[in-house]
Image (cartoon, rainbow, N blue to C red; front, side, top):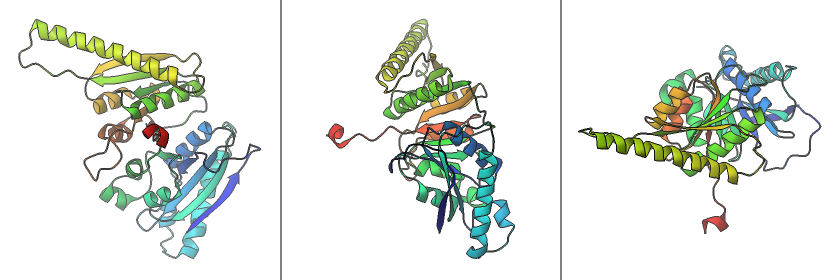
Length: 319
């Protein structure tokens, strides 16, 4: 059972039916509240922000658990009330901009299935780092990690308080793959909107020699220098080709020694408002559409994380 209704609106141009929405998982928790704040801050004029509460027998907010009932005629009104209260608490803040429109949806289903049912591929899914489902979290992993693996579009996991005017740097991982270049463009556009610096990082590690000699050390340093030059070239060419005006974007590049997951999660501390990574390839587990680096960053980074996938090529391009 799904119910949906506008919660707040502004005088904005009519939305296209296929326009990407910001779909936010809201459950009355602090994490859900911060995710909604982030989405409202990022919404462009006329863009829809859909605040969604999905609840089922194994994944209910504590307020619904307290009812100790399985009857929908009691659960659904309580879920609607909880959702509307959570949305009103955030939208009532005078410090938040009012660019987009806000709608609500309450779904009687387990959190992951309920959110995925609402999503379209272009939609951006915004989640708090903590959420529903005590039992399901133990058995199958968190709602965020499951949605990351199953939603083909961009997913943002919000950590910590969301400031209205946040000019901290944006960190992006770049390794030359199409997904990482899409992440670079996405991160650059995000940084421009916030007037924030952008730092593009590549994790790189040369094979270790069993018998290090001066020559092998020299070769390693030379290869490291080539990696730096290649990263600078890649960032410059990608941002030059990006659509839109990136203006006077402050971009720094850095190659760091280490594995991708460890390097990016280690760097993504409170100096950065956001870490942006590409989705990466399929994992060995069930061939899901998420690489191990992006999943590790989303789960372990100390700051908010956006996981971005390159758009599918058009039929003309593919042929």
